[in-house]
Length: 217
Image (tube, rainbow, N blue to C red; front, side):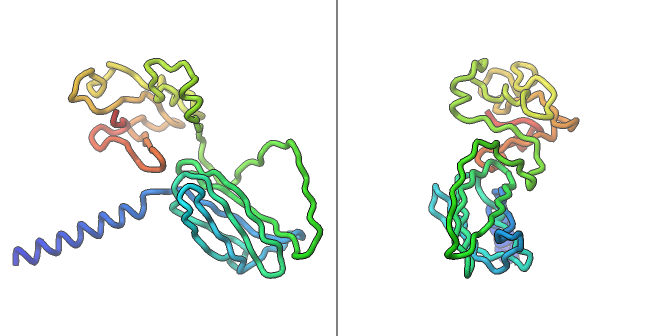
């Protein structure tokens, strides 16, 4: 009986671990496929290729011409749309951490003359994304005059954030010893308590499991 209970507990633990691994990333790419008249194109084949890993996902547009890829890691992708009677089209897209990127595509009729227009217009607003965010590139981190080279100090300049960012020796978690493995960040997003802060690296949550609102050093 004890052995049977142990095996059952092990199976449940494996199931929970597998489920957790499958839900690690929360990025999404979605959009609408239409023709040049604005009519939606159902049953179009949409392929998503990760340029870093070469992994390809395939789906088709719904009756409303809508497609969606979910649970994606932050990376550079290519979205290729192909439909009968239309010219295939490939669109590059860079997906950041926990972002929902809208990639709406207009296909030209097969055999129609192609025209290339180069403009200097600003990129359109991504209406599929409702987050307030700030993305800091590696080159910026290397060039900016950060105290102690601690990138957490930039948290305070993100949109909707109040606070001083990273603090030192201001909490037990910031003591300079081998037993303090957490880092306090004094920041409140849009009025939310700082204990609700979440820290992600490449789409994975790295927030502390011990002290809420902090991250491992």
